[in-house]
Image (cartoon, rainbow, N blue to C red; front, side, top):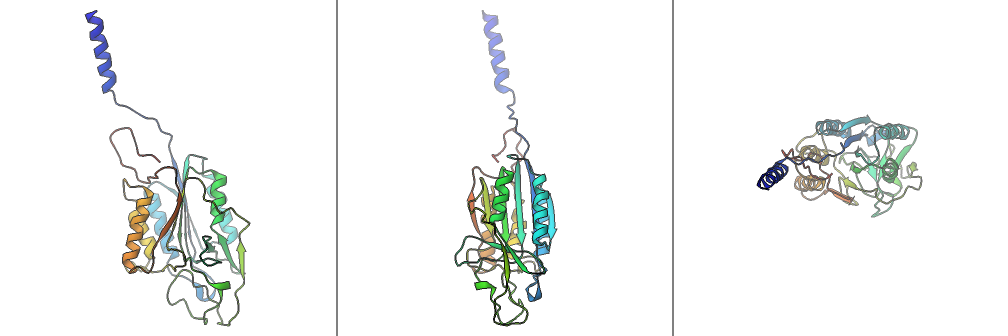
Length: 286
């Protein structure tokens, strides 16, 4: 009897001290990074390509397989999304979509952001809801959308005295000859649904009705938003909401409160892009 009790004690002791392991399916991380700056006439920007290239490097440094596309037309955007789709495993992939370039809304105080492509035959803008629709179809496990563009409203893209983009904002759509007439714009909308996909966070470089600056005073080759995002995105052990909070604080300080980033989200769990490298087998939820 005593031998049996000793055997039981040793068995329980070994069982209690054995390291606990938790098997987790690997999470794939893929990104589409877009930088648009070669627009028609006086509407060219200086830094979206620099920002996109910097974001590609940052994302790759934290394990994302990244597609970089520059000065894309609507047709090229559609091709890029198809390529991205082929890299996504449903419910097993974190998808990161980044856009830097011109942006506007078509109605005051609208939540629908429009992003300008670089089509030369006609100005072409795409609704952010196009990305929503794409992410719902591919069934990403978690999605992050980042838009470094203006969100201000300009009625029918009315020209403003034909001036050059001297203030360096990412939304001042101006017509070349300065005539007071509307600029024709092709709106690629397609009645996309406006609801966020599951477990998604969207980060905008501005609040509604704000303009996004093209130059940071810390680094003239990047915008204030992208400069801050590249600085904080690879911070370890913080959820993505904290990354974007740090970005917002940085922008507010740099612009004296003139520009502030903002987020919309429907997260189911915390998203940790750079989780803590713990010795134990448990890891933060993703």
